[in-house]
Image (cartoon, rainbow, N blue to C red; front, top):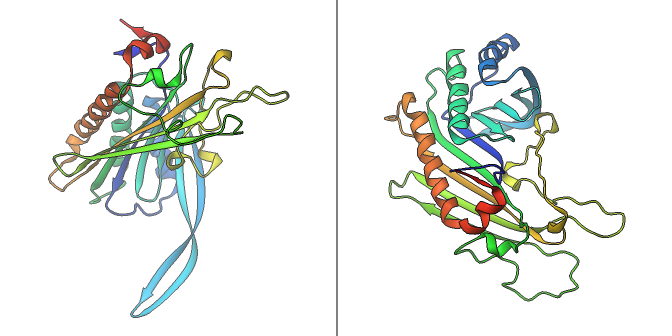
Length: 286
């Protein structure tokens, strides 16, 4: 099932490793970039993060300042990005085609990373998959787009003259394996403003946990909505799947684990929406 106008605006796959990667020469990252050209990445951006480092000698502790490099590999339009940080590989998209292309490219990034000599004897410890959807009502109310979900605004007393109203919901599941988790967060927020001199906008494009702290590694996110939606609320929905990886899970299974997380997240999404309404807004393709 695919949509002509999909609600998904941002996706990310994260692979967390057991140990930090350490620092490498610039040529090492250029080697990775050369390999990543096959998935549309063509330039490097380096972000340096200041942090305090703790050193222990016997019973004595000492702090020192240090920097950690986060290396990003971007497409020409910056809507495709792969990031190597201290202990995590991350593949992000703010233009989404379908899940197969996304997961194949995320796995390809992992393969090229390993081929370049990183993470020797450093197994993956956890995998995460993130989907961010914008539910924007078009010729309907926001509540009409959901089934079995009670939106936060309206559950408590409010005054019709309030300047700003917003609310949130959070839900988590630990699956039977006890190694997999699905989390859903929903934030209900107002769409733009119609007052004189004010611009239409969405106050928030991503949940706090996914906001990039360094603008150098930021990505553009495009959102369109009709004039008729202004003054209503929209829902920012973040679906996250995660799985703990054991030593018995070899690297050839990583792609399969990503697929499993996608399927569980998609099931959660499908059970959340009112398909009769949403299929029309997002233009379901037969």
